[in-house]
Image (cartoon, rainbow, N blue to C red; front, side, top):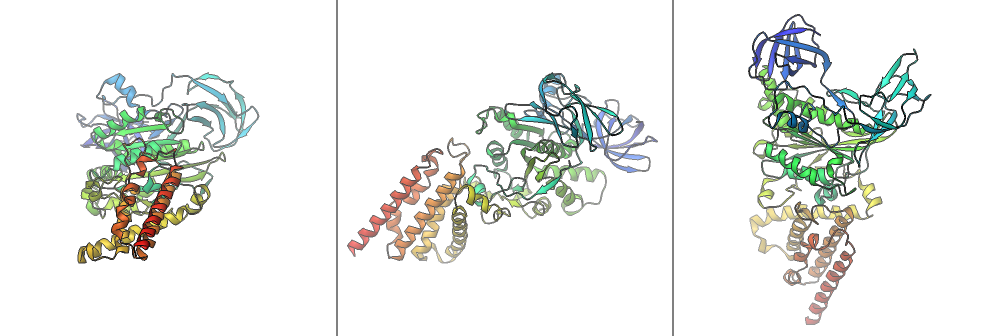
Length: 590
């Protein structure tokens, strides 16, 4: 503890000098208003501090008080369903206290310390426990059981446990004794530094997909649980809507949604929509398994930089209980811009486009905290990170996009031209990729169908061939193409409109189960193969088109409900019989 004194103010960055002993990443209280700040550089007796609140009005000579502690989160029951800012201040509570505008220097508990939770003990007197062992549990929401864990590294013996009942997070729920005989009181609360990754016993190679209900993701560019993905795209290409869809429909146990530097109206949409949504698995409110972190573009830039770490630390806390957590970061570009602004005020040597030279390492640290792991308590949990990237002008060669590609394994590239054509999600299938596709093949074979990946491969090949034919037709004209080539174009048109396009606003099409995705792929490939055989026998494509099957296919996603998969048998039979009749009629006329 001690004091330094402000000698320089430069936006969110201040310099404090004096003999007080500060440490790197210590939290400090700045000025008469006690603004929250973090030490980010030390130079002799000078401490460089980034302040998480507006610094207007600060004066030279005001005191800066040290706390001898890094920026840490309060981890306890009460996080799920809550809305925090970038440094874990609960926004609903702040609004009740302050109204629509938050006063500076306001100190408030992150978690409600007065609410009583129904606690059920797990550990018994005499049990030997170590880091990560479950002591008890609390039903945090109807969807989530919060497992209270022992958080220290040493082995201890449980000497006292409370009986099942109502307790606050700060009440003592157990007492443990170490080998030296020291007694430690255990509460439901853990404190954890946001910039320090939480440990685990072993990292596991994930072979299970994160099911999202979005066809182009699940079937074409899948992501594994514990995987990393980026959604780059220019303004208006649908990044936020796609992340909303993933947050609503993915089969993760818990969603941590980080609104990092986004416009206030977009976060307002999230805050208004999510409490109204029902979780399709439990038919309970979606907020019962969701944490929202709102740090909009008009909030202090330093808090924006911290919000990413706040979100991933909360995700690790629930991963350690054995949950599969999905983190939606929207957007990492705004976070990188916060790094750039702070770096410029520190007068650091800029790298490409003014971003700091340590941008790649920061991105690596963030995405490196994803993964599927075996926890200390022998449960298995995962963190899947899906980060939106907002390159200016949709230029994927800019530093944030290029450096992000180094550390992620799925790239869902949003295309402005597709968005202008009202093709959503506007994922460009020619430049997007998934490095998990091969690893997940066995899972799809075991859980959906043995030929799921065969149909996926056929569709990818057809789309690639279509791209080549489009380039050729620009030179020689579409009319000179042979019918078998025109058939590729016609089939791919149906694939694009009937399979790749998905209407997030439609009651049926907003979420498609894997079985229906499989049957949709099977139907279009069957239709293409049977039509191709007719063309090989000399039947013109124009007569096949007159049957209207390719047009009808585009509407199947709406006309066949998710619980009416059996109707695909009728559709397939109809298409086969119709094509057979056409073949018979053609043979008869000849």
